[in-house]
Length: 633
Image (cartoon, rainbow, N blue to C red):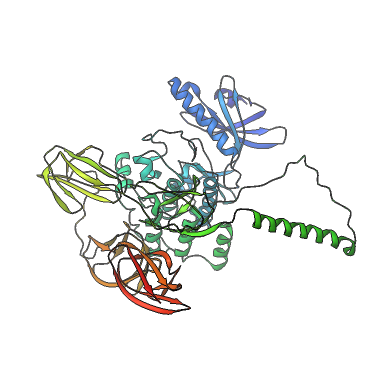
């Protein structure tokens, strides 16, 4: 124990016998210890209170220790390092006793090896995805997902640790604008706003897996400012050469989605992201693929179920086994009681109505009696008195109370309109808003629609600035600094290569599946990009959900981005008399009846057919906005 004396470490921490030092940093140490009662080795984290300068900082670090213990107490997953004990050692400060993982931190493996096979990388990805989804199902956001907070055991299994800055989604532990986390793995909203939810963890997890698979950071930079700028403003880098064993198109599609700037455009869960990544992997034997898929126990689309257990002090009475003849009346009686009880519940209890909930625009969050239940469009069971609230960034919330016999309309969400000051440093710049030059020079005031995305450009002589604003984002009266292109914190433009790929950027109100020259490029969401070689291409666009299909020719210029615009959405309401029928749009079943129900379709020309017992009828309509059809069958 002489070494421990030299390191000024205690020989005992609570009931734990200290064995050796595992690691040390500016704020504390981690030691290997043993619980003498059960002979279990544990890792103990000690905090150096004397290294914290102010009383306020001491309070914050103590709160983090306590938070890590509380949060970990809510989690029970083999992919999360378990916390066994929390306490304080006189003269040494607070401690956490946690599960000891014999292995290496993931950041060390990525930087220094050993090299991992594709199967080993995917097993790590699956384990971490399951662990994060488990935490999110408990309404816990980690907020610092990075390789340094992952231990890989000797058996190859990954374990997530360090929930010191985690938070409950129903708690408010951080003020808006306060940044916690590691810059290279932070999400855009974490950098800009400081307020995060589970989708921020999904972004950070995407950065981690990008680095694990390729050995490169998706947003590299020599300074923190450059890294943060690229995370907020630029797409992930193109990996050159492409990652061996992964389809390049699939790689771009998957990581463009998980690293989307807007949270609502990302995968719904970490396991959903890993499943899509696995679809793009080609270098994996059939048996290995089956094994990795087997590790994805949950689909990732829904939260993990709560763990229900019975208390150990309950007593279960097991009757003596009787003959089958003697026991069947007892089982029959129980079955009859269950049937009668169920019948009473369905007859006397509240009967719900399953209804379609739509909004214009789509993708609004839906709250049922103040509980989040999903996003539009969705199908939801409602009983009289249920209260719905729809929220969408940049729009005013909409409230609705369900009454028996009601059919909720497609809720029109009204955008928030504000007057915004556009300013620059230096002042006197010309302004272009959404490709339209404004009259006057900065500072000037404009009417700002928060429900739309905006592109804002300032120019003055050789100085300029270009900014993108998502729905709900406003200039806020800030004076944006104008810079020369050669000094701005962006990557220097390389010499134009006539063979350099270009890109398509989707602009519009819904996602489409894109085929270029017969090759399927996958789903493309608004604001995302698809890479194409320069030249002429024939595109096929489709969105069965919104009854949209189109073909068009487009020319891609090397190194440049071309806009791919799809039409807006419209609400179509169909009513017939006498009687109703099934409504089809362009021959495709909409799932609604012609009883005044509505469906959301892409604007443009459509063929509307109603098929009922009284007959059928077909009409062609041009939809440039919401429209109601009423006709006789």
